Length: 251
Image 1 (cartoon, rainbow, N blue to C red):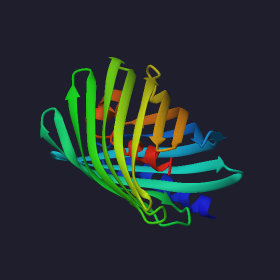
Image 2: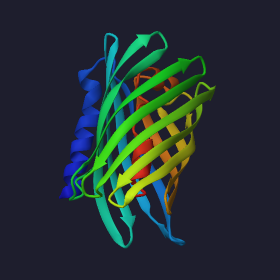
Image 3: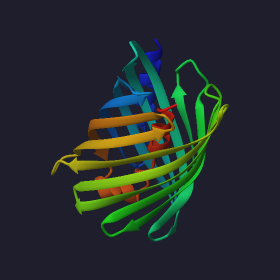
């Protein structure tokens, strides 16, 4: 029942969004990920299937961006379904600079308290690139952890329908036993199939959290509405909290 409720709520929100905003732009995707967690020399693999979506809703110089995802995870001999949701409010302060704030909740439906994140973010738009930076604070009651994150990402458009990106973030994790420094970094690519609204993507992310290393490979298929790859970035539909989510996966 939990799986049905989460999937239904996500689908209703993401697919209804274009209907109530004429200028809405965003995407819906399906992704398979294979995280490999290394703890004290032991490797544990997981299988994760994700259905996610993002929609950006403009209002004059302001934009509301909504993210939602449902994850089905199979690991450690167990299966689980959880949700992620985020809301961003940003403004175009100049013709090529967007900045604002966001709030996000992870581990929805897991049976634990949601993991909350608040932060500030900014994007700089160049002719063939998008630069993104964020500062965020995350708190997890169940893990008894507080996380400060500073991160950045650079996306380059080799062609209008091919985007390559690389990102890195530094995280200070305050847990019961003391402070832990963590790094998350990764690369990715997305190719939009010519004359279609579909694109394929692949990414690699690594999170180093003290003695825990998490390496994740992902492959996905995405459907875009309202515009293509670069149009999504320019409209604020590329905003997300993936770097924070990667760090939380190592805790």
